[in-house]
Image 1 (spheres, chains in turn red, orange):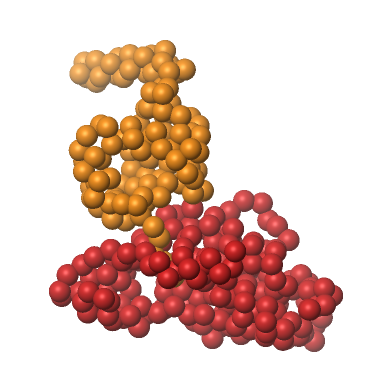
Image 2: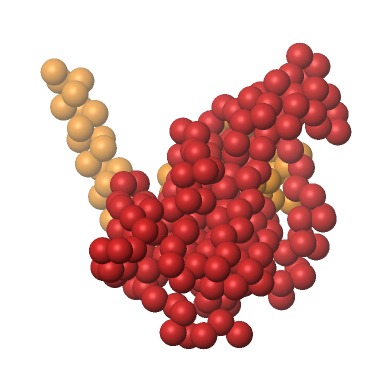
Length: 191
Length: 110
């Protein structure tokens, strides 16, 4: 569907008239994709694993560009309840190194499958409270179908593959969150 | 001072032994995460496994055979995923010397 010509490598948006927010050269700079050799997808891709919060508005705006017809985002938020008890703190543990590698692999699959102009994944770790942002997946494409589908694909895969573990605690107890079968089902839809 | 000298030579002896066993033992860096790390009270360890241990499933069995806390923790935390050099593997995934092997429960991020 989307014209292949509608797939510029985004970074060389050298047109001075171009909207400055759309130039991911800046967005890809600090603390961006870790890992080995630079690859052509790098300007499209921005993956961050961090303790700090993020600003969804800034991330979504950064994906806006002259050929971008659609930006879709998912923000995962820490809840104040679980099946067991009221939750005061969610602690996210992860496997540094494998986390980045696994997010890269998921992103690469999404880029292979859909014509994306931009893909951002931010996942936090450490102690979070109710209402805090945990994860952002944002996709940009020429047409909405690719952006919607790729966004859903990335979060479904992230949930079942990226090495993060949640521990919930509150005044009534603490427990490690169990993996959900529904998450495996959600992922299986893409196979 | 003399104590340090003694300890140094003991270490050197150990190293000699290890070198002698090079083809019969393999060193691996093991990591544990989340519920499993907590059950073990251990986040990481370096082990030297016998030559009979050639894949991820055999490694898990060997760790458990050492007794507690591994036997108890692996019995309590199930299922457990295994990653070899940061890529999820299976029981029949072959090991290689110096590898990083991580054991962890199914992931729950996002």
